[in-house]
Length: 317
Image (cartoon, rainbow, N blue to C red):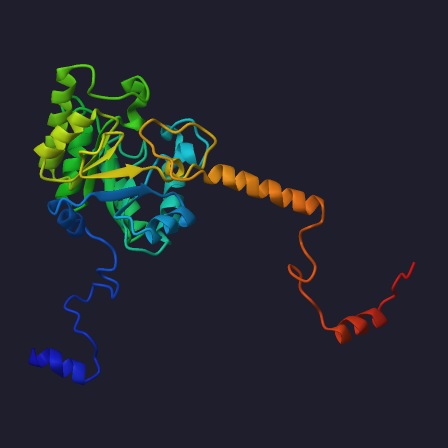
C-alpha cells in the first residue's frame, strides 16, 4: 500500500501489475462475466454480426455475446450454403466486426473446410482467427454426435487444452446439413437421438467448452440438457428453457425479403423500409426534388465566382 501511494504521489497513475495488460482490460465482457450471469440465472443474450455496421448495432445494444457467424455466407454474401464461405472471406469480415467498439464478448465461428482436414489445421485456424483481432475471445465449433464425430471432439479437446476458449454447437449444425438431410429439427424422432444429443453435450462440457449452442431441438429436450450441465446453453429454435438465446441479425431485423424460420421473432422489417426509402430517393431524383438548392448544395463567394467568370468566355446564348 505504501508503494502504491508513493507511485500515485510521483504522478505515475494507477499501478499496473502486469505489463502485458492493456489499459482497456475489463472494458469488454469476459467468460467470467457470462458465467456469473449464468449462475445468477440471468438469461444471456447473443446476436450475430457480419460487418462494422451490424456489429456496432449489436454492441450499442449491450448484447452479452456477439457471434461472428458463418451464416454470413447465406445472409450477406448470397451463397446458397454456409459451406461455400471461404476462410479468407470469413477473416475479412472478422476484422470488420472487430473494429466496432463495445462491451460484447466476441465469439468466432470456424467455417466449413477450416478444420476438417486435420487437427493441426483446426488448431492453426483457431490461432489465425484469434490473431486477426485481440477482441476475438472464443471459437464456436459445430459438431456431430460424440459417438461418431471423433475428429471434431478431439480438436475441441486440443484447443481447450491449449487455452483457446471453445463454445460447442450441437443439434442442427448447418455445416452438416447434407448428412442431416437438410435444415430439420433434431432429436425428435427417437429416444436414442435424445440420448446421443445429451451425451454429446456432456462430452463437450467434459472437454472444456465454456458454453454450448443448442439449435433446432424440442424445448423439453433443450431444457433437460440445460439442467444436466454446469455450463450455459444458448438456444436457437430450442425454446425458452436454455440459459440464453441467439438470433441471426438479418433475421431479427428483417433484412431479406423472405419468410424467416419458425423460431425467429422479427423485431423489424428493415429490408422493406430500405426498399421504400430508396424508391423515395429515386423519385426525388427523377422529379429534381433532390438535391434541394439551399439545403443540399455548397456555395461559393460571389467575388470569387465573378472573377472566374471574368477570366473565361461565358456563352450567354
